[in-house]
Image 1 (spheres, rainbow, N blue to C red):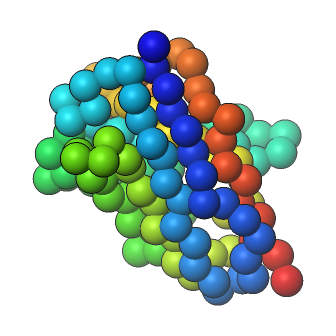
Image 2 (cartoon, one colour):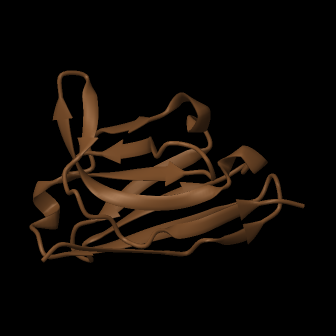
Length: 123
């Protein structure tokens, strides 16, 4: 079955950097676009970044453009999110999922989610 295992979160000071990873299994990873979502306390889960199956195209939500970079390794079945210049408002649990594009929007492919990885930005 589909498994998504996020890791790499932690506590970081404002302005710092962190890289989170997601190891995927149970589906043909290289055939799917992949995405990162985040959910802050009391807020809806939001889409942060998407990368197409071959890694040729990426999309970011406006609040992270220029600071976050999504990448993938189709040999290791892993997707990454490099986060630089972190702000307190980036504090959230970060999740990955496969992604499907419909019209001009991206949606999560799988209904099940991993446990996520907590990112806390605080001094």
